[in-house]
Amino acid sequence: MTTPSSAATTGYDDESRPPRADLHQADPHRRARLRWRGRRGLLENDLIITRFLDRHELELTDDEVGALTILFEQSDNLLLDLILLRSEPQGELDTPAVRDLVQRLRVA
Image (cartoon, rainbow, N blue to C red; front, top):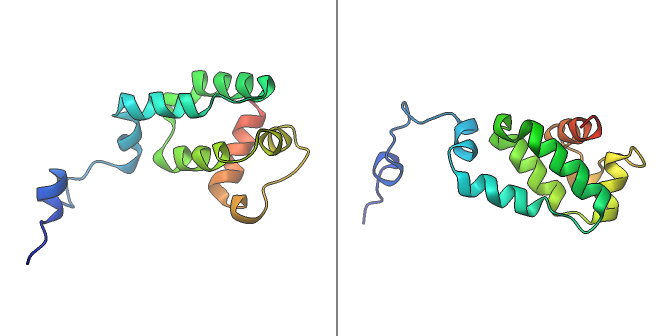
């Protein structure tokens, strides 16, 4: 049994595949889902994240969206501590993409 080529399954061959940054931005459902996941229980987080997304949502790359998704999986208190410089990313959060995004959230 053969598997379909990437061109058959995605509509793109490897050479004409759009850049990764376009995948999130081209899909309004993904953008809406990101905004919905950004809604938090703590008002402070909600305000910071909403302001950040209002300013930067359309320019986020898929790597940045991935880092934001990882942050959204954390508790509200940990997320607020990261944003307010009470703590730094540690363990699985200690990646360049997450660190860069936390820095951007801090100045949002």
